[in-house]
Image (cartoon, rainbow, N blue to C red; front, side, top):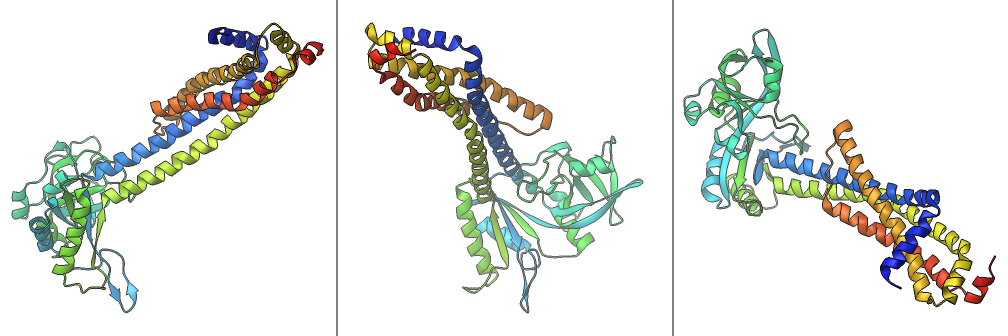
Length: 406
């Protein structure tokens, strides 16, 4: 029997019991739709986290001052004063995998403009910091190396500081007071949002020349951190080893002794976040797949009922020449057709649900073609798997007994 003829017979058989067919497909529709929506939700979250990490900078390594052990009491990171400006210049000179580096020292500060004030993070650095962080300007410009050399009172502010201090006023060219010292705002940074690694608002910050911070505000001659950019993501691991070895040598740290600094590779954070997102996506897809399993059981149940109802029809077909393979193929195709129609509607349901989640809840959802193809293949596999037993049962009927069946 030709395949198209079998498909037409299957469609007619399903059309005779429209409501039952629709209810049978409902499990597949919900299952496929749930899988697409949940996988899209997981992949959207994964993409968002990776974008946030990428927004921190390219091939970035964070070298921070370490901890201190005083009489068995270990303090938090940033407690040591051994990370200095000469460490940064040595990294640039002696670490081949490094292409750029920027020093950093900071504290909190109360910033005043007119009658408004705002408490924020204050960071002293140099102009290359913004290139390493891939952080462009929304307006104005970055302070120059000349400003660093002359200990100028200039500042670059983040978007959160701009909103809370200036509102609708253009901050470029305005003067703010930091610890009662006037600073001219020369630029506003593009908004970056929350950090994917620490969760803090990256835009709630003010940046000034490192020399200005050290000589006019804090008085410290050490660094809290050094931002380093490697040649590539792969080279960042080599850079991490080179920096660690160099700083241990410069700080005269004996073998077996803890470092008084730490080197954090952003590539490691990205890999960890990617693994966590994959597990999250797999968990969501597994939960949603339960609906497909329930839908498959529903198909098996209905096809078994159909075999019982059509026993006489099966006997007639076999009596006029239909083989066991023809009967088995007919019932198997009916199950697959149910699954595929349900899967097609489920795709529409899943994509629609994803759009609703994005528009109503604001969650990032990424519907990939791979998820849709997988859902279609899976729905067909459900039809074949759960339709095989009823089809086999129908093919195994004795034609004589089937003709006698009332």
